[in-house]
Length: 119
Image (cartoon, rainbow, N blue to C red):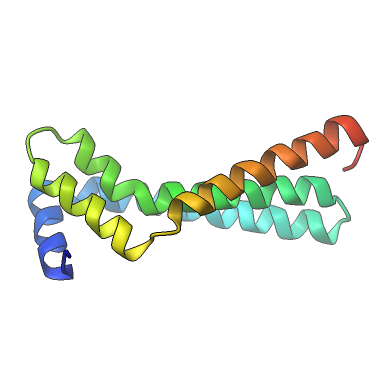
């Protein structure tokens, strides 16, 4: 079990700036996907809206995985990577399921648009 104080210390030592930058960019992208989905639902383009919801779920999974990805890209500190993996599993045990659901929804939306002519 990893506590907040330990994970924050490891992030400060390893590089908190790339984590903050990536999270900020993904936050904006996630908000844009949510806005696009809402706009598509309002304008009656349900298949397109479902695709945007799928993208939203995929981006949420990526957002939750940013610290782990940064820790993996910074060679040398295996303890930080292990701590990030534990932290992710403890805090967001359903993150993989959210990402998989996003892919299923996205592929379903594309199929609706390609094969059934839905907007």
